[in-house]
Length: 228
Image (cartoon, rainbow, N blue to C red):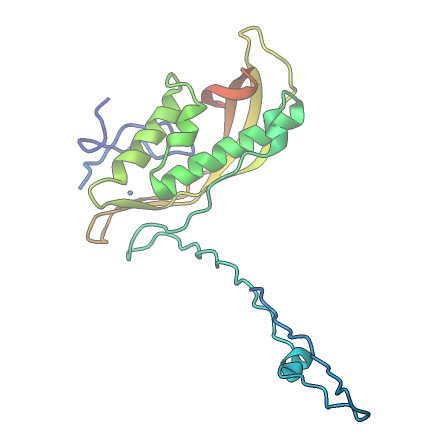
């Protein structure tokens, strides 16, 4: 398999890309003065002196801090790549070796996959995926390769309508998770904003994730298409 930058890799008919190869052309400070009162030694009292009583009575409003606004997300278009893409966050339950934990982890994994298409950043997903997963590596090459030399990808968002597992360890030591995967059409933008090509929305596909729980975390060994 040639690296992207030379040729778009062949991919499985699943949620990643089509099989068609193509050449690559991703203070509070309120001051109040005390009123000073004095008396003459004589029988008549003197007037109270309070140089700052008016300021004390009115008070000074407390300054409040203004929260920093969150930069708005903008999807990719002919004007440029996606901006301010939210980084997927691993749910606490996904850190546990439970049925709910494995299913939450699976959804998180596919969110990272989707994040890779929009940003070209595959650091997090690669850290929890075996390089022996062929389909994962093909997707990684597309994501990294097309977010180089001023190019970018548009669309390609991945969602998982259904995730389920029996939470039983198979003979090979893996937990199996059945996943229904849906992906939006994917556009390949050149550095000048023109579209090199567009992959149409593929039919929803079924995939089988094989994962293990080791060192207190889930790890994906491979993902395979479910035939049928």
